[in-house]
Length: 214
Image (cartoon, rainbow, N blue to C red):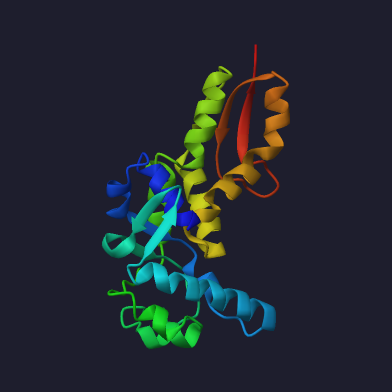
């Protein structure tokens, strides 16, 4: 019910609009039974609670009736190792059942869509073009401090290489950029520098160049 309440709030508390909305359940793979007694029971319990949601039932909260029959529900998950190869094009409901998702639950989803892993070029594109990339966050921060912020193509390659090696897609980009620049932040906040340029580190060099204020 918490998910429906959040959707209701996102729809401006318009119940008609919310009932025709899209509900996205992220990390659906984490609900797969693990074999451990407590985890098995709790995860299966969550799976069972989703059956009613996917069946188009009515839920009641805040004096409102929420009919889920017209709701579009999307479940996302990495499902690492669900097939032996890297080709997910032929993944089936049986593969998900063998992974630990209830057969009854899988039967409620009308389509299975497999997505390929991100390539290094995909990761670079996200890092450069996404409005939510961590470089934009630092750009805004440094602009507020009147510090010139820049980076070169070698730095983009460096971050993409590290993210690709971690096999964690784009989710590790912020951590990598944060780790790269963290040792410079104390010196920058001390007010001694007018600019910072990020680049690929060589040997023991830092992955950035700081310019002192005149």
